[in-house]
Image (cartoon, rainbow, N blue to C red; front, side, top):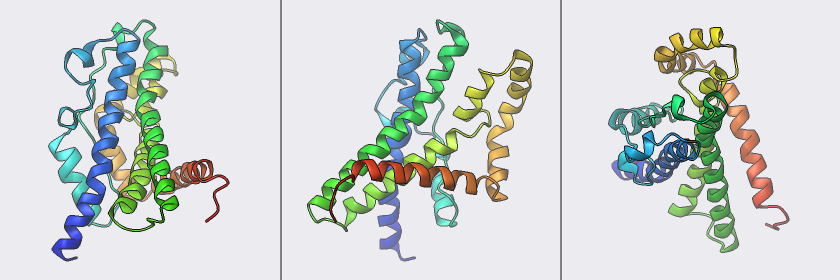
Length: 217
């Protein structure tokens, strides 16, 4: 891969990745504030400034490595701090807080699809913005589905921790510090890719059917 292609590829993916992680994390903080926890707000994490959410290794270095090694684009941002005890109904409201991130990614995927339709209507079905729009849909859906896996500390794991009995929650809490490494192992073994691929494809088709409904190519 020549240097020009490399730079273009990084640029195409960098824009939607930055939007995806920024709104995902800000959504967690915003919903937490709505339900009574101001921790993220006080720390400046309810923000659309990407710098506040970027983890140098997890957001930049690691995703770049996975991209060029030919694997699934994978990375993470600095998690938004949430004090569950400050929420008005801790277990119930925590579920809404954690689901806010994947919901934000779904909305962003939808908006990238809307931009894609506009480009189709204008006859601009190639070029940089077209590539960015396609990447934006895929990145947000991958991030959404990946985060919904029931592995702490992913959002799906956090939902699970707040619906199971307390004894089970305590066992899951002991797994949480190792959750990312468990996920990486499952990814390397190819265990979760079929699940993620099926979920991404379902929502991809759903969004395109809604956005392009009735449009004649």
